[in-house]
Image 1 (cartoon, rainbow, N blue to C red):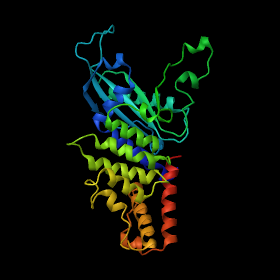
Image 2 (cartoon, rainbow, N blue to C red):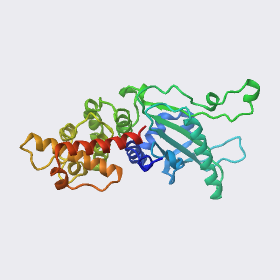
Image 3 (cartoon, helix red, strand yellow):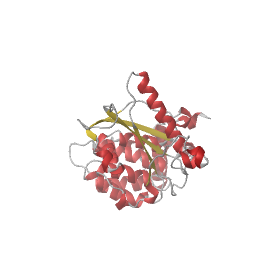
Image 4 (cartoon, rainbow, N blue to C red):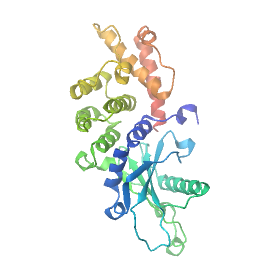
Length: 325
């Protein structure tokens, strides 16, 4: 495996940024877990757990988020003892095609979580998995181990029983994507991130973000959305993105922001060639930052020829695509 495959994809980066916000994470839990499970959880105590359980070789395509929440105080149970918390486990699948091995991967991650609890001298706790899938076609492969391990009825009773719910965004309309504003922004960006419809959907996504209200780090979210959109989508141009942002957040989109710096169009604004070179320069700088490469200066890029810039941008974009395969 080459070095490129070990770098995080734009989907990983955006997913981890968005669901590190406990308000968005809580909304995801509340919209995906059944009412009887939610009744047993005190989500006021929800916290993000540190550490990842994804195999290093797979980390370029997957991103796991682990949360814990205390059980409702005084909850009774037939078991002799009830753990003081439930771990909630979330894994987003970044592949463009459904992966039948995901259910097995999830089970291995859950075992690692239990092993860590035991190493820390803690009791084992239940783990509730969830896969957020945003591929281009429906998830039609295994959702539980029974689908993966063929066995007769007699033998099946000796096998591990495990399944995981799939939040398949390809089968959800915008109206069916529930939750609070931050969760809707997150899931819609994931749903349309690679799709040519992103340009048409972006205005409404930003309108939802605008409704979050005051006292919220809006600029951080705008920066994350811009970096994600330009690094994951091949159809949206930097100028289209900039215009859409300015139409919804005219006072937030100011010089010096990450997007304004990375999407700078160069100093030859009066000439068509200069504008095109500026767009390419902004895209190259953004992709370099995403991939962890040294970022070329404006002077270096603008002094290069048009064909050289196009080739450089294409090479960087190809590296991002390979991570997403």
